[in-house]
Image (tube, rainbow, N blue to C red; front, side):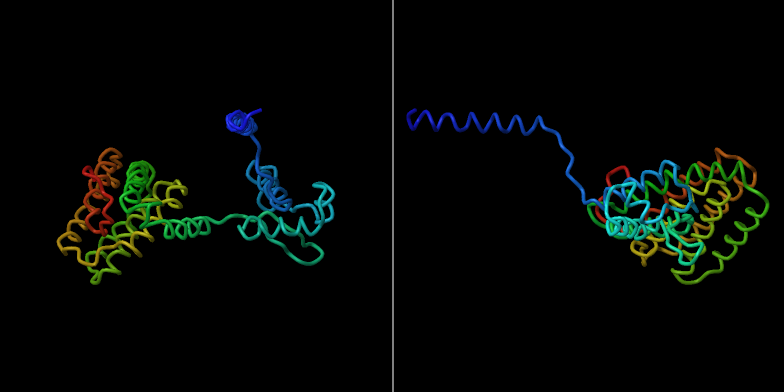
Length: 262
């Protein structure tokens, strides 16, 4: 075979190898402890292991998975670092599936959103859009499901925000009003998902130079929303909340990502 023929043959062999590599689909092998942790996590997520359930002992898990006890311990540490399991000592101790609290999930979301916000990952505009997606239907549900104690709490929040002086305190009262609406919706998931957005927007993006007239407009909007919820007019409550959140956009710092429709 001539030199030119060899040179011509090499690319052909490489192309064939490339095609073979592309055809062979494999999953990257994960460390043994991670595979054990993943399988235990799958059992937690599918309900096979419920909150409060006690896991088998390290020795039993070692036998079940065919790995060493040190591998099992590392897997349990990985799950514990995510607050999925906890270990108790004593005769009645062991490793148990943790019961996740609402505030715990909300705090985790706030931390994650805070780290991602203000970058290419999540923009202020996207957070405001997400807030509208969550709070407009929440206002609708609140009009349908509210109780008298919710209405009284909203009235008190509106009265307090009118008397509040200072940016931080005023926003706190504003947030309280919205929080009560979320509670009135009787859907805890809406509260879990929206509360972190409140906190990140307040902490990182609240505009310090908002015209005081804007806050007076906020007070008026809240009164309109409260009236619709009091009257159990779901359509009016949703519409008023949508208009309110649209106007609220100017109270947050522009990250330069808003489009022409924002």
